[in-house]
Length: 400
Image 1 (tube, rainbow, N blue to C red):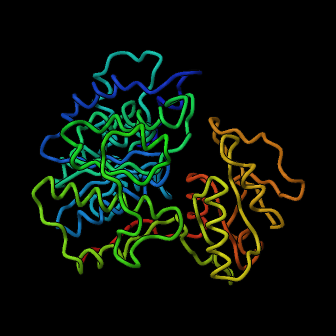
Image 2 (image 1 turned 90 degrees about the horizontal axis):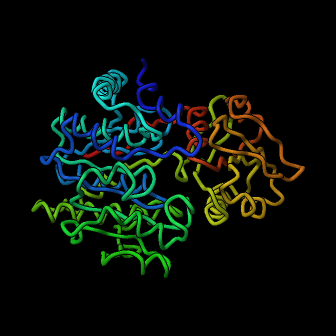
């Protein structure tokens, strides 16, 4: 059985209406000897910007002299990027070894019921196990979906970062943004309240959250926050890491060392710029999934280039396709469909848009579309584009 099969098999075999089995994941964690009380946890929950928050938190901890294992979901280009020790993604051999330990432990579980072990939850358990095996100082764990109902809740958090929350997964995590906020904030327990930080939230969501600190916009040192909507995630991740250090009695990194780390931080697929191999062109990749995010990306592209030649867009039915159509009016667009059964691409599109399957998209096709390209949509699609342009996703930051 390959590593991918270990992490994805139960999810791929799930029946209609099946949900992740948190109790089964808890039993698997106990078999693996998790959670490990020697490794404090910074949990990241929210609707948007979780990966950015996790990356910034990990970089802050590294600048303070701590080595963290960081688990994010999904990957940029390869699944081993979901687990990092410090700034580096684990190797294929390390991921295979972790998958083997999971496989052995899963054989001791009771027979499956209707639920399943989720891929993001299994990567989270593998990352926590890697932290113990590697002697990491801390864990930075990004929730896959939710909070109280997510495997991240199996790890009592020393600190919590709550990124912007909106009505994503309505009917699954809650029937309103406020209910979703309460569900995600379920990882905040009395022991973590003093190190729980939230990005600024809308009225209903803010009222639904417990008493937590709000990260002030612009609090990051000048020039160290990313452009666009990723800024909120960066600011809350930075502040949550600072509060975690304080809770642990550790020194906050000196300003010069913190700047040196954050200046090198790379966020592929978050308003990131890439040369197009074999062509005299450049591509802006951004995981924008609604009109506001698309507007920010187009503004950044026009500020750099003056104009946009072509847009690659991938938005399944449950994303803000109407907003995208409005924002992209007048621009040449290629709409890309992904081959995943859980994503539907059935909504009507403008007649002028070209439609292709992701599997048919090649690097040479990018150069033929123009010199100034913008790729927008789901993280899975942006990861495919990062693969086509051979983006460097091995190392996220550098601490001198």
